[in-house]
Image 1 (cartoon, rainbow, N blue to C red):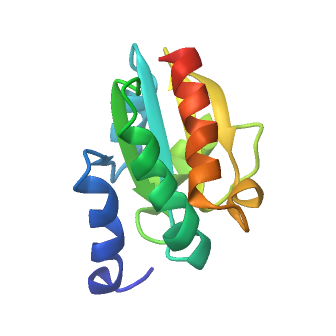
Image 2 (image 1 turned 180 degrees about the vertical axis):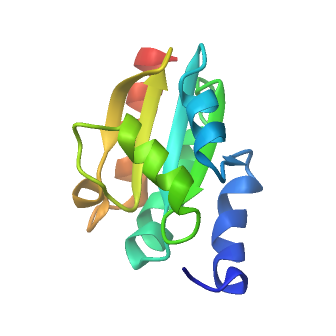
Length: 136
C-alpha cells in the first residue's frame, strides 16, 4: 500500500473528469455487471500510468460517444476492488495499469500494460475511442 497523500493526485486526475472510484468488491461487481457500458481503469503509480494511461483515459472519456459509466480502481491501494475487477477481466492476466470496456457485464475490449508502455497517450486514446464507437 502506498501513502494516501502520494496517490491522491493520481486519483484526482481521473475523478475530476468524471471517473467514479470503486473501493470494494461489491461496488466493482455492481458497476461492471450492470446494464450498459462501463469503462474500467486500473490505475497505478507507475510512470506509464502517469505518462500514458491516465492521459489516454481522460482523452477518450471526453469523446462524444463514451461509456455510460467511467470507473476506476487503484492497484496497490484497494486490493479487494482491484482483485474483483481483475477477476472480471479473465482470462487476461493481472496488469497495472490496464483499461477494460464492459457491455452488459461482458468484457468487450481490454488494453493491458504491455499495450500501454512506450505508446503515446493519443495512440492509446484512439484505440479506446474506436472501442467506444463500436460498443457504446
